[in-house]
Length: 379
Image: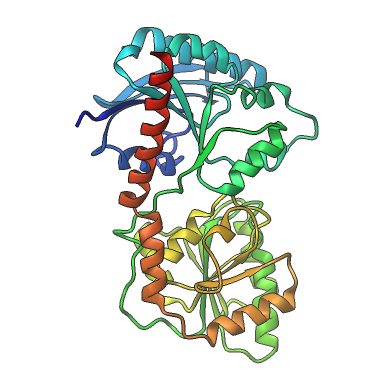
């Protein structure tokens, strides 16, 4: 059977400036490598001294990046569009592909109807971005971005149903969409038959808004005041780190709340396996990869009932909480600490949903359906 030939044009991707940038996009694409013939072009305008950067990581993975000091949205959109057209005209053989998969809608497809003139094939967009939920952090309507989603020739693949709702609310229009979740490395994030440390709570993230670690600190402080013997292990780093460490020092909780710093995937998975519960308080999450990782390890989860988290966290594997009521979060932690969860079953359910094999097969089926139906329509 002939493999599907897909050209992936990505806006975020691991790069020399940040080797972990949008690693979830790379995982989506890599998962298809045994199932499809992939070509990747990373096209991006990013902050830095003015310079064009062109490089290849392999025969099938290339990059064209412009660093510039400009922060003007419109200029970035134009530059990105010109770079996409350049690649389509001069860097690839367009007709060899069954279709084009753009990863992250904006700014790659700000002028989607123009881009379509140069592809000659179906365009699918795989999106992960929470910016739609927050209207890109501005008050005004963003008509140029909204207009992309009114192009009915575009098909969308979103990592959660919540993201579909966000895009439709932001754009004020319905989109033709499918849902394919993020890939979790289940070779690392898998069940470990070991005894977890009783009453150890764990949380890890890149600490910036919309995460709210200080609220969890307040909940743990309240538990300690109630005489509960608990310990909170905090992994990760980010803009909130200094504030977090100062809060713990000021409240005299250094023996209860312990910072483990930046952790690699194996260290995160081991700490999840060691812990009685994983907690995640956030004002919004499109999907929350870190909660998916806890699910795949089999660690019960207490999380904010926001975005895509309720699509996989439920009574069988944890507790969802609306808002930030300290008493409710305290009660939830005590409940989970006193509940004997089937951690192996939780891990099996998470692994079957988020493994590379499971996600990639679903991803390929969606791409096949879209590209084949569009090819028939062109005949």
